[in-house]
Image (cartoon, rainbow, N blue to C red; front, side, top):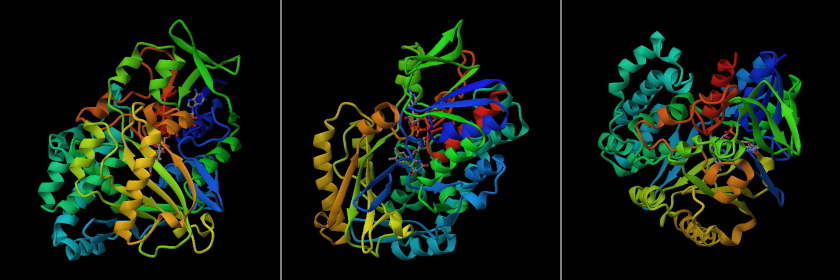
Length: 486
Ligand code: FAD
């Protein structure tokens, strides 16, 4: 029986473990932390529970697929709610737009609040679906780096449609012109941040992302996002996957340009195949002892990171839902700060996620668990202690202004996550949330493949490699890599 070692028990690593164990390989997973899940962490204190990382869940069928693969019935193990509202948007002038998942309700809401015609919104969402249908088989479901991908009829047909996808325009160019309204352009531009990109640079092909939320649906998993890594861990164990927790791999051992094992905890562990679920930058820089490839990765722009305050709030806010956005006044300035000046925006957009709206046990009664996040650059060069103090004040002022409250006196629990902690806790270079950014037309092609062309038997999965960051793509990377491993 062939043996595979997976480095990292992130969502991509565990999804790959399930698929490869099912294929008959002997699978062992090495994980630095005492727990599995990587960025999908959990934070607890004072009666409050928070999902530490991802909060938006789409494409639940990708989890169902893993449950079915493990010979279990999805609904016996994993349940979720389809959200009627994907997000509530708040603007400085007091406008509030509810992002209903129903097309008609949403387009009515947009028309009533901004005067933008209903047809424009519906047309945009239809175009989003068209981009998805055209690109998914090339960019999301297969290796971009194998000639066989380009020889299929589906791929050829998709390539013929590429000229209709506005690949030479930025998201903002398309959205500003299409809606002629800054509020709605800002609302749809925000989808670039779903993979840590900048809508004023990223190609308009990223207008594909609203399709996932509006057409395919946004969901809330019962038990929170943290229930997902817990479930994948259980599925792995049921298939005989062995976990080495608290075990940081220090080196990938090579013999004649072939990966043959790993060094960990003063021991050598041999395997036929090594699959890295860690950030590809650290694989080359650290685990392969500054293999020249790390310079290629270094030259690529990182996706944005985040500064998050986990607040226990001793009050309930009926105006807020699960996902809420308090927009900055000038989105262009915000992204100029983020991706050109590499500083924390002077006026950041504030995202508030409140899982206790749906999972009552996540907060004491009459209280709410607020996950309050702003986008920040992925950077080692900022004084994060100083940034935290300044940003906390800015965020509090914005919340007070937009929601007409005094939030400071309601905070009875606080924890904080910054880019340095993200790097230390999950091995993500510079704390980026989604690996490399998608700010260039060619980004998808330069993202690292799911295999090494220089080192035999070395493979990659997770958010830092093809097809990219975010839970659905990390799960797709596991699917692609398990198809590549024969
Ligand atoms: P990771 O989660 O990156 O885990 C990698 C694992 O490898 C870690 O457990 C780490 O400890 C381990 N490791 C690293 N080095 C070693 C080593 N040397 N030896 C052993 N183990 C090692 N995505 C969404 O879809 N929706 C969202 O709303 C969303 N929001 C996010 C918010 C935040 C704050 C963060 C941090 C991320 C968010 N994401 C979101 C992104 C999403 O979390 C990631 O894309 C996804 O979880 C990445 O999974 P992964 O498989 O790459 O593994």
